[in-house]
Length: 386
Image 1: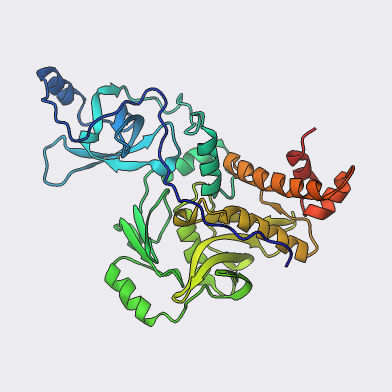
Image 2 (image 1 turned 135 degrees about the vertical axis):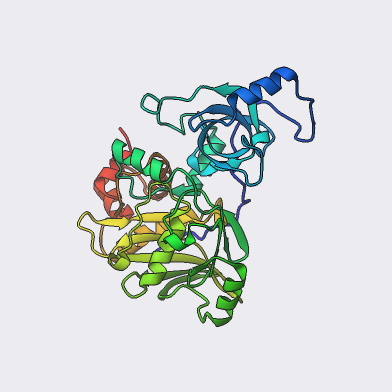
C-alpha cells in the first residue's frame, strides 16, 4: 500500500530537564549540619502552602524551580511532615511528581503566587535543538480544542497524577498525566496491563492469572500491514468497544489535553506492533474517525515511552497518509495542532516534499505537489512558506 519507510532502532534516551543557569549541583550523599537560623526558617515556613515556589533537587542531582501543586500528610510522622506534589515550572507537566521534604531547599521559599495573575506557560524555556527533537518524537497531543477557561478547568481537575506507573509487557513505565480511570482504581498508584487485550488490574497476581486465560497474542481486529517484525492492526471501536476504551485510558496517561472518548464506536484504531515468538507487542497507535466531514485522517497519535526515538511517530504519520491515498482522499490531522504536534508534522511534511522535489526535474506546481503528497493545499502552504 504505497511506500513506507520502516523505522530503524535508535538509542532510547530518557527525558530530563536542562539547566538554565539557575540550577546548581549537589552531592546527595553530603550531610551538612543544620544551623539555628535554618531551623528557625524551617519552622516558620512549614508546612508549605499549595502555590509556594521553591527550589527542588531533581533526579539529576541539581536544583530546579518548582511550584507546590498539592500536599499530603506523611503517616505516623510529626505534624509538619508532608510530601509535596510539585510542578517543575521550566518543563512540561509530565515531569510533575511527589517529592519528600528533604529534596526541597527551604531557604529558597517564595510567597504563594496569586493564580489569577500568574502566567500559564510551562514550556517558555528555550530548548536546544536536541531537546526539541526529543520532544517532537515523544508525542503529538490530540484534540487541542480547549479554550483558556476550559484549559484552566482541565488543569485543575487533572493537576495530580492518579497513577504513578504501569506495567505493560516487559516494561514498567512512569506515567506523565492524569487519566480518569473508574473510581474503583482511585487508590492505585500502579496498574498492570495485559499488553494484548489492554485489560488493567490492581495487582500483579491478577495479571498473572489473567495472562494464563487470555487467548489474544495481538490486538483484536485485522492485520493490514506487515514488514519484517512490524505489523499494523486495524481495530474497529464498534466491534471492539472494551479494547478501544482501554486504549484511550492508557493513552491519556501520556497525552495531556487529549479528550477521552467513551463512545469509541465512531473510531478506527491503528495499532502498530513489534512481533516476536511471544506475540505482537504494541509500540504505538493512531486513531481516526470513520466518517469525517473535514477529511481528517488522524484524530490522536501516541508512541509509548519505551519505543520513542526509534522513528515510530513518523511511521504512524506516514501510514495515515498512505491510508488517505488508498481511499483516494487528501487527508489532514485534526486541528488545531498543538505547538509540539505542529513541529512533528512539519518535520514529516518537509521530508515528504523534499523527496518529491529531489525526484522532479525543473519547475513543479503546487497542484502537482498536492496530488503527489496527499497533503491539503493549506498544509502545503504551511510547509512551503513564501
